[in-house]
Length: 165
Image (cartoon, rainbow, N blue to C red):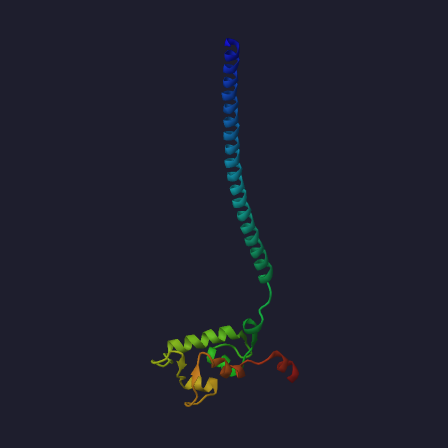
């Protein structure tokens, strides 16, 4: 019997060594799992950052391409103005000025001479010079919204100039 008892003891020792190996491997696997999760999170963060940078770069490229150095058009394009408007603005006859500049000048003239009503600053009360320029009378209500309608006759289209020549 003593022989069998001796054989049983080493088997128990081997079982504890195997258990130790299993726990060691399992702990190593759990560490790998934690590291893989951390790497995965880092990769997702990097991917998000790269996509954001690419999107921003595309925006900048399209913005640079779209703006470019192009000549002004529409309201920003200089067009010939009437002699009355030239006199009002103090410019030489036959000058070409953009609508935006004319509008800024008229708005500053209105502010400097306090030509808005006290109840509603959007409504303009033209003085004699502005009445003559806009072609309005006292019954006409002029606002910042509709002032372009009255200014339109002072902007001479380039087509009509070439037709008269």
